[in-house]
Length: 181
Image 1 (cartoon, one colour):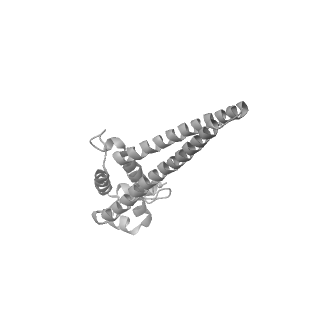
Image 2 (tube, rainbow, N blue to C red; image 1 turned 90 degrees about the vertical axis):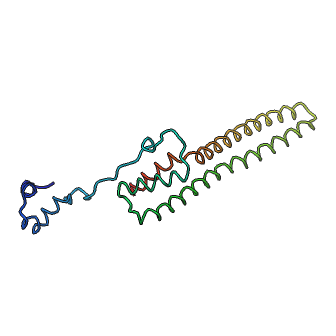
Image 3 (cartoon, rainbow, N blue to C red; image 1 turned 120 degrees about the vertical axis):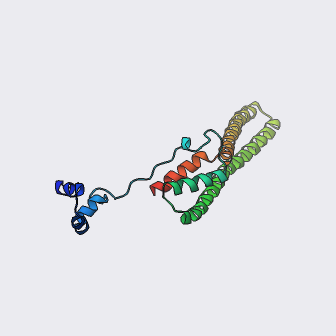
């Protein structure tokens, strides 16, 4: 915390006083204890991206990134192009991860359907009531598994489609993460 002596100097420093006292300069420029000496950059919110409510394409997301980062002076015109490349890579990685999230339920659904089909064949060939009852219970579990995997696949497909259609929340999160690092 600046002392009263420093505040007096800040109020009316003479030329010699301001240039010769490093502590006075530190107070003037905000470099006193407890502060990093720089203001935090303003965070972006989805509502700040206009027009609100409309989907944001990848090209639009890049344009928002460029203009916002330059406007708040986080990046200059020379640096922003390189960082747009990093943004593009992150978009591709996120989309690939969402596709991978879709592949696993698809594979599990195929396995569950194959298991259900095999159980149905065994049920058709069953000879005793006990065997039939056991297989019917297994078929019921297999049908539940098929239903669960179908739901998981649909949710993953919706997440991928939503990401492809609108990058608004992604770009907000990406920019704010860059500002924190």
